[in-house]
Image 1 (spheres, rainbow, N blue to C red):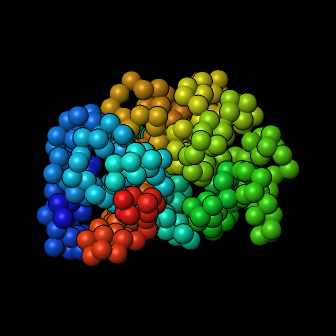
Image 2 (tube, rainbow, N blue to C red; image 1 turned 135 degrees about the vertical axis):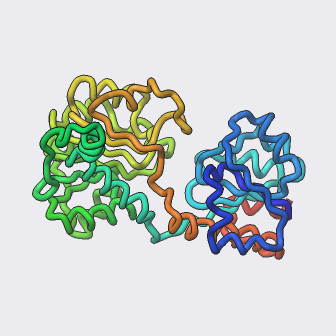
Length: 324
């Protein structure tokens, strides 16, 4: 099959062991991002399979109509960026291993890293040292702090383990079903939504972005946080309505934020408030960006390519497209 891999910005996949799974295919790797559907369609016109890097490229009806040779889109995890109905209408099979029970430890580790970096002022201290000014201020410790985890899922569970190992207290909030699972597991759930925000020193968001979770973190939620509290978002920017976090930070509640996700990605605007505000630590959506995570994810993705080539597709999201 003619396989085109999109958005491998650092040409990482060729160097991973799993890349050998594509040895029998004609593979093209694109190391830049092309947002325009017309130009993207022109560059991948011969593709029979598109391999996606998570949500870096949106698969729209406009794009699919321009790709008559396309048979398969292979990716991993959730697919809010893919128009599944349009895939089916155009006879394109979407395969995505939902990796049930397997958290992204890379994302959990980055969440912990952002908490530590923010509390210990690591970027500021390093910059001060390089500027010949020695120490830049006095940080805070995580031990004894209350970590509020919003969303009772796999990644949040890993973060909770790391936090407890550091001596932090952990409490939970989220959907009614999530809170019920947490209580059934003996976890600590806040008395109320307001109490969750008001009593947490750090709040970390771990919720999938779906229509029902979009904008689920409100201005009132953030206003309930303390003036020295920290909001961490390594999940999705759309959980908070556009501009709400920036306004809350400007008002001083929460006092700080550490974010790895943005409304527009890749974010190139150096004047974006989340990049210029002094109380924000920002990273460029690197939560899952490790060699280890890529090997795990793309081994699954390439298995899906081979399965279709062998006439026995796996992890089908729209199986009806295969029967068309």
